[in-house]
Image 1 (cartoon, rainbow, N blue to C red):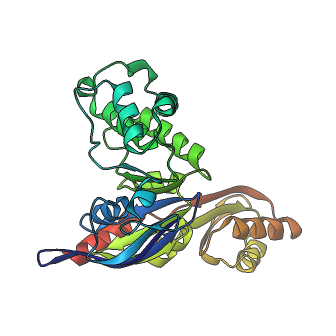
Image 2: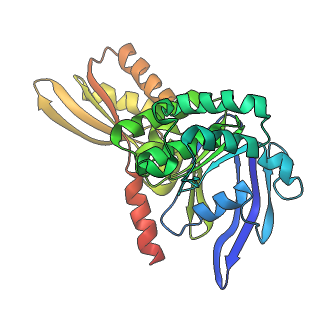
Length: 309
């Protein structure tokens, strides 16, 4: 759905984006990650058609963003980091206007605006001026405007900035409800956000893609793999089962009675956990606890930032 090919963008003597290529499949939710200055917002602006690349090509549903600009941009809803609102317009009026600017017919704009406001929990403030709203509500109005044309692609740059915890949870539920129907590219520093909602990650550093794939694959590439923690009554047989599941035993220790705590690392996928459970059951090993502890992507970003300084 989104294809970026060899994107390059320079500002004066600084190269903000340097040969970035990636593909976001239709219907997926993709996290766009990296330290400050990695090139995320610049890449977003180019994908949205707001900034021309110096080199490279961007396709939205097969349409080139620059040679077929009208076709490509009609498929895109974009929420920049600062929601671009008309402060002297009421919420309903602004969202209808946003739909019309995307080519929605006048007789359809009111219904689509209503649907977008319902999704973003804005119906109670629909008659208020945008300029009277808090930052959190303004972000929600910007998101509703991005959704008002029912786009195939949704570009979100730091969309939860200014939202309270309850609103963040509501936003996650909204993203999940869109999965499969809309292709989402989500740029954020809130790493819990991407781990809770995304099925693919793209990591940038100093203008280049350094990791890409499923969240677990990216953790492995960045050296922050997930860990599997189990409590069993037969550590010797459990160690064999861990190896059969393709995992590595990191530690084992007695805790109480016959019970031992064991930690395994590696590609802790659902398939690996299922294989481990089957092997433990086959060998008659009792399991009291099995938890996955995800490696901290924050630590990988700290390392990237230190290397860049």
